[in-house]
Amino acid sequence: MSFYGRQVVVNARMYYDTNEAATLELMCPVWQAEIHYTLDGSEPTRASTLYSGPFSLSPPATIKAKAFFDGGETPLRVVEFPDIDYLFHYKYHFKPVSW
Image (cartoon, rainbow, N blue to C red; front, side, top):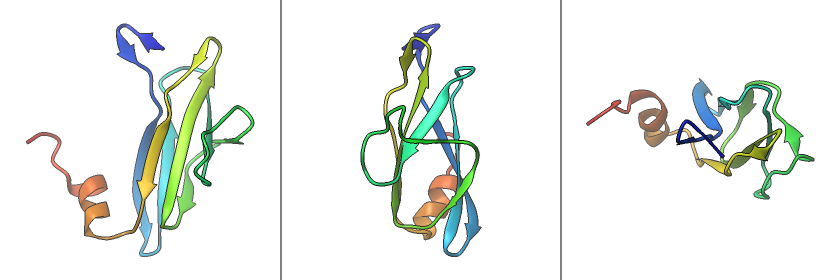
């Protein structure tokens, strides 16, 4: 599905929580869309866990998310979280906006 020529997706944002965990926030620009996610590697359905707010997550983990709304669903969003190391900090905190 697209609005104004742009594809609608689930956005993911991670925040450093502790040395052993991070906080994951999922968002969708479609009003009243319900985001469902899985942590077991399966593709989310309307019966999967309903996202209700940011949650803490310990590595290693793979999160798969989709938003469902009247008239459609978003493409699958996969967030891989292998470890909290220099790459995690670079990717989610220190990466330049543009090169």
